[in-house]
Image (spheres, rainbow, N blue to C red):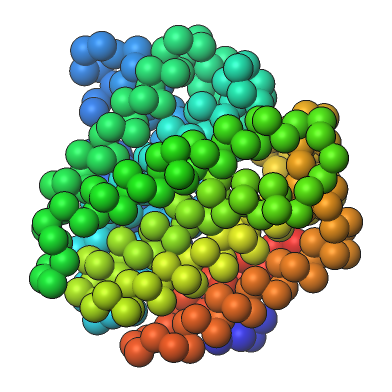
Amino acid sequence: MNVNDPQNSSVFQEWMENRKQEIEHTLEQLLPPPDTRPAVVHKAMRYACLNGGKRLRGILTLGFCECLGSPARRAMKPAAALEIFHASTLIHDDLPCMDDDDLRRGQPATHIQFGEANALLAGNALLTLALGWMGETAVPLPHPPCMLVSELARAGGSEGVIGGQIEDLEAETTPADEEKVMYIHTEKTARLIACACRCGAICGGGCASKVERAGSYGMNLGMAFQILDDILDCTQSTEKLGKPAKSDEGHGKMTSVSLWGLEGARAKAADYTQKALEDLESLEGPTDMLEALTRWLLEREM
């Protein structure tokens, strides 16, 4: 689907907005009410989860479920789980002991709003709640009942998001190294995006090979997404980003831009986007919206 075509763009934007609203409604309903004891942590959890964002991971989960012929509602709780897990990682990323950022999505970071200890505990609570929501979701055969929990646990653990964050911190102020950058991007960002795609395919009743293809797409899309994030950090304002501009440079981060330069990073993002589109071609089912989403993400900056 050509998202630059006015008619196609309108259909795609409506699909995106509908899915986003469905996810946000689910989050509003499922997150503990703000007056539930202990109120401060539940207020912090809701603050971190309900303050905007693209809902990319949740939309991908719903999109792959639909692509494989099942209604999106079957993947709604896993989609919400991916979103609150992602929110937990952003809370932790912003903490003074990590990236020490005061702004997130145009608002004070959670630790600025609620204090460092409450933010840390809110992030931990969201992580465990996400696993709980995965466990409460029925998984169609031939997959084992615990598969969604296992998918998120693997993607989010020491050999996934946490591992990527550790090496991201270790790499600060060191010379750019391609193997290190690729590892950080793969584990810190792409792994969770791939998990979202795989969970959607599982909820949609996809066989093992389709789940693997969904995961391959997610890895390629996730790499393109992170490279574009690196580019945007260098080229956009704080107001547009909703977080401090040039934060990566200020922290001495090892990024795709510090490794390949702006034009080289743009070329890499386009290459990974093309690989993701090729992954979609190998899937049976209606992939138009996922294809449009893939192209739209690349065109955020390019």
